[in-house]
Image (cartoon, rainbow, N blue to C red; front, side):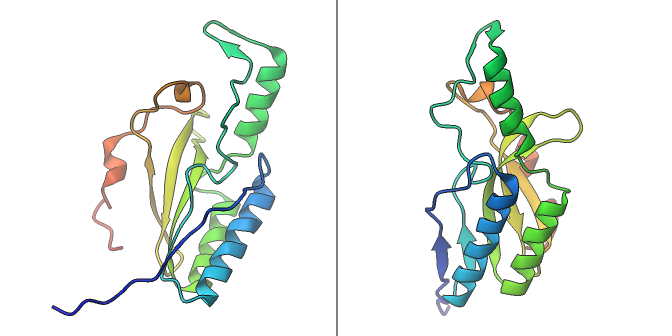
Amino acid sequence: MPFNPLKVGVIQATPALFDLERSVALVIDWIERTARQGCQLVLFPESFIPGYPRGLAFDAVVGRRTEKGRETWLDYWANSLEADSPQTARIGEAVRKAGLFVALGVTERDPRGGTLYCSIFYFGKDGRFLGQHRKLKPTGLDPYVWGEGYWSGLLSNGRDL
């Protein structure tokens, strides 16, 4: 069986923290750049959009959060990405034009209640949003930020990748 190498681009870049529109622009720029370099698959880090909340406690302790912490949390929430959104559609269009596969780490906002999830969004080389995988079990202080995912996101749900 012949071996066909796959060129993978692994992005290790600084996101536009808490800025959804700039973050989407950065993702699109990286997709275009990696396509010009001949990549067929591009991988982004965990929570590239809107940025991994390392070091943020949102001024919370069990049973209490300050007003400043609530404001910081709301800013993080407002700049998180929904699967069915104009921003995700713009990323999908960039993926289609580039003709490669993308796995994008995001903080996903669920529109049916507002829960945030530490997710990976998958895009096919035709730009289709193939689905997402939500982190199954946030640990440590992660549950302050993200809800628990579910196992079905590990499956392609019968869709062709």
